[in-house]
Image (cartoon, rainbow, N blue to C red):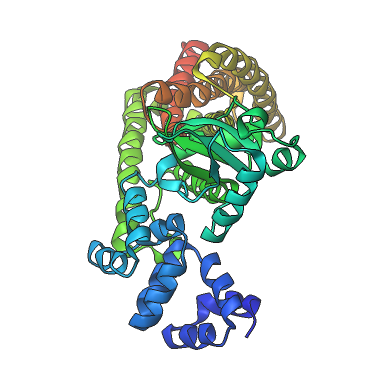
Length: 432
């Protein structure tokens, strides 16, 4: 069996078919396949293997991949799998497990190329050849450390090969090194990678001592995870901790029910707003025909604005200091978009009355009430959708919580207040 065939069939295979397919691979292909499996799948499959094979494959994993796998199993299985490692690897993995899963320390690999600054270049190259046998994460960057493991600089293999005879590592290294703290959040880390297109970044503690490196392939997984989490929050729910089909029923229920209840309570305010204008509605039932039109326009404009702002914040394009610029842009956008919809709404009322006599002698006033309300509602929705994520970030919450359903619910209530207030002003003494 080829790796591509097994990869394609893997989700549909049962336990026995997976074992048979895996054992049908050559050793080289089996290593490629196992290391390419998502952490959750590799953890599940590893526990299905016979004890001897389980030990072999567990010891084959680099420490950072072993940590990812261990974070997917129960505490009891974690202890058992840790016991399969040799003493050196077990210590490395235990150190990494002490870091939070979504921090730089939890993503890093402790296997990186290192040299001392006082080594001659030819000595450094011989030393690196010996290190290369230890399954280093990458040899593209070589990090220069002192005896206390403080990060002094970085040097590439090209610099070492091009160095003059007799030069030391200190002579050719780059002293200005971009490093990240071990407690940096993975989202901030991914933005740093995007801004500078690094292949690898060193991770240091609060004293500048190097702990490991985070490579670009780790960041690819982080970006995918963060994008998935934000997309789920945009839908008005908590982010799932597992793939959709692997999430249990009660976990899915819990993640979705909480936000649904909050949104439902918010929509209750809409009913309260309708009740407040009950007298106006009783006098002019025609006004209720345009309620869905008004509130949906406000909700749609708010959802657009919140999506744009949240995504820009995720990409590092917006900061809290940009709030005034965002408000100014969205104010202009809200007025322009509201004006377009207002013209369409006014024409809808006037033309319907001209063709069918739908609204009687007060058609123009009804049309103006609809048009002016649309300007106000769309303007409010745009401003609310753009400012809410920034305010949530300032308060220490996740901006993605300002999801489209949440903004739409907020704008529903305000839309009714704006609509019936405008209608009362324009139609007072006539229809009302």
